[in-house]
Structure formats: C-alpha cells, structure tokens
Image (cartoon, rainbow, N blue to C red; front, side, top):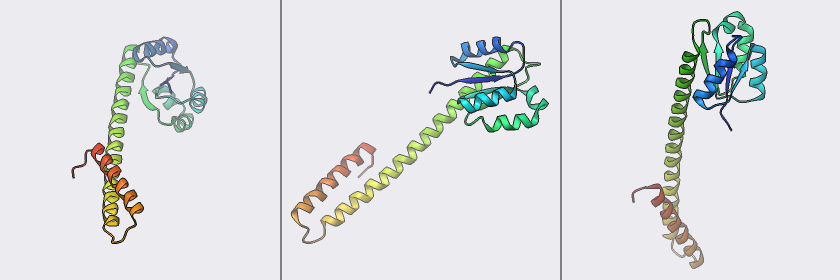
Length: 165
C-alpha cells in the first residue's frame, strides 16, 4: 500500500502546498477543499496522514467530528493556514511522518519481542513434554523414535530462538 497524504483546506494555495508536501515527502498528496469532500476521500481511500486547516475545524464543528471519525489510522496534522506558510506545513508533516514511523517501529519491535517470548515458552514446554514421555517405561520403539525426533526439532528451534540450555 502506498502512503498517501490528504490536505484539507479551502486555501487558494492548496494545490501549491500539496505539490510542496508531495515533493518533500515523496507521498502522493490529495486535496480536499471542504470537510464533506475530505470525508468522502477518507471513506474511499486510506491515508497515512491528514493535514487539516484549523479554520475548517472551528467553522464546522459537526462536519469536523464526522470527518475525524473516518480518518482511521491516519495521523492528523493541524495547521493554521492563515498564519503558516507552505514551508511550515512541510516541516509539520515531515515531523509527524517521522514520529509515526518511529512509533510503528517501536510497536513492531515490542510485538516481535512478545512473540519470541511466547515461542520460547512453547518450545520449553514441548521439550519438557518430550522428555517426560520418553521417560515413561515401555514406550513402543516407533513412538519413542517420533518423540526423539520431536525433541531434536524442538532443540533446533530453541537454538534458532537463542534460548540457553
């Protein structure tokens, strides 16, 4: 999925601003001049970030709430286009995208650590179960061979996971 940015402003310089954002970020940037139009775009496509003119939020609070409900996982960037130049908008969106990227990386690393931890626990339980089953007197040879194979495979997995003996 290609990351896209939505710029919502009635500003006459919206196209120029969108081009500057796209050039600075490398992300396709779409423009909506009203909150209604933005809501339609947000319902039909997913955006990584949404640049919102604060004027529209204040002027149309009910439409703002509806539009914000459709943002999904997009990071909102609120800008006062009355006092902010295009350069500032570009800086704000770059900062927001870097922050989002950092947060996603941290979340992904945390999920990986949790998954590895759970896998290590499962492998340890599997090894213990194999050891206990192999210690039962009178285990038929074919079953013992299968249990021994499972034990060896679990040992290989443990080695790959970096678990100490």
